[in-house]
Length: 174
Image (cartoon, rainbow, N blue to C red; front, side, top):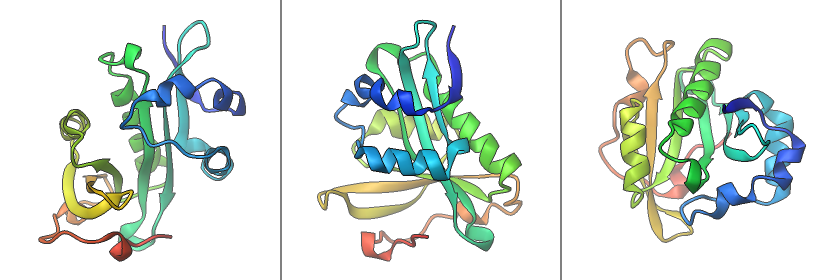
């Protein structure tokens, strides 16, 4: 049986196998620790009965006014645990926290434009491509900014796609 629980410091020493996928962004330890300290409600692990980390989601809440939103910084599942709907469960948890607890207007994430399996999964979860960010990944590959409106965004304004691609320096950061 899989348990989904808050990510803890010990998980940092046990989740390397989850990050082995070449499409998974990896960060330095201080980056993970910052998320764990600042947004613990947005950082969860899926763990099997033996205590092995099967996958995780890391995110945050940011923005102001109608731009107040949950953000998925990373979601990853180890290859041997895929096709069990773990990513869906982790995404649903982050969306629920963003919607019910933080009253966010939408959830967003960035995905490599070439990562079609992930794009299809996000689309099945109700995400739409909001905009293309040129050369977002290492100055080489485009990224797609995908969004899903939450209950605060009654008119679904947050998911009206932009007509033109943008560059990374046009992104708003909080």
